[in-house]
Amino acid sequence: MSDGELTPPVGARDHAAGPEDAPVTLVEYGDYECPYCGMAYPIVKRAQQDLGSRLRFIFRNFPLAESHPHARLAAEAAEAAGAQGKFWEMHDMLFEHQDALETEDLIGYAKSLGLDVTKFTHDLEAGTYTKRVRDDFRNGVRSGVNGTPTFFVNGSRYDGSWANEKAFIHALREAAQQSGRDTHTTAEANG
Amino acid sequence: MTQPATPAHVPEILGAGTRAPDFALNATPDQVLRLSELRGRPVILVFYPADWSPVCGDQVALYNEILPEFREYGAEIIGISVDGVWCHAAFARDRHLHFPLLADFEPKGAVARLYGAYRPEDGTSERALFVLDGDGIIRWSYCAPIAVNPGADGILEALESLAGKSAPAKAEAFRGDAAEMRP
Image (cartoon, rainbow over all chains, first blue to last red; front, top):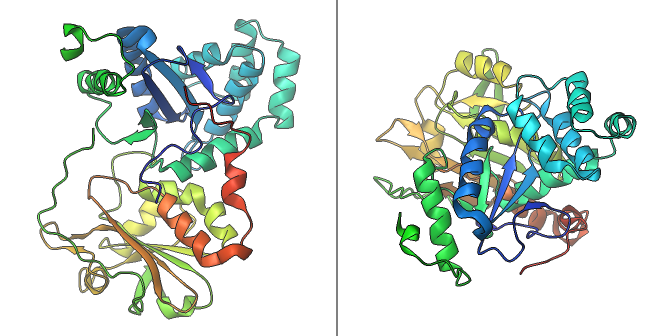
């Protein structure tokens, strides 16, 4: 077994927020229609605020399409927006509107983000990112993703609680310290 | 970072090389599935504690999503818990499951016990996985801490090694175009 080791490691194909040399890399495998991912969304935001440039956040797709009929197309919508340089804007939009993920909703979000709507719509209809989303799913399975959301901290599956925000952020700070690349070792790290 | 999960007893599930004990259990109120009927192809046996786990993307739902990957190896997957057939039927319908769930209901947990995967303190089975070859021999088994969903990576690796070198080179294909780029 891979024992919950991230495969493939974070690389050029990933959507990343935060510096490449951050001491902590947090990877989420998530589903835009999953209510638990929706609950995790603001927690990740606060973790990003708390750790600042010490955290790099990566999002990979893991749509549970049998349970969530809109999840796969929503994932493709984020990828299509990513192709136009607005991945995170669409990612946030989707998590903030989890109950409105019909095709026309997605197109509406593309419009409000100022995307080229013709290209965006074509990408959804043609399934331009179907394989990309499927690849994320498959490599997630290989990495030991066991539900959504699943987090990896510096390449290892995080089996602790993310719903306990304090504990989650604490675990991220600890991972930063243990990485040996954290220059930020003030008392704050014990908080 | 790992959740402390000390089991009350250490389960000793059947290991690789053991012949998988045959059994016949109800898959629906009027259908019985016998393990030996599945000879000739790999079989994944998934013992899990209970239907209606309160998380989405739980173990059973996850395997349901991964069925196409399992089927690439010609494998059959079977879920087993101590829940009854009507409970399984409602659960399978609710989660749109496309593989059978067997009721290890009466005598309760008898099949789980055969595989060393019963939890007497809870009256449920462990989260135990077995991959059987086409001759009904266990080739891989794994028992996860009860609170940890074991995912499917171990199952896929076992199926891959069963299929040997002649298998389609999927594992590499998954990795896609991802360039290794560790800081």
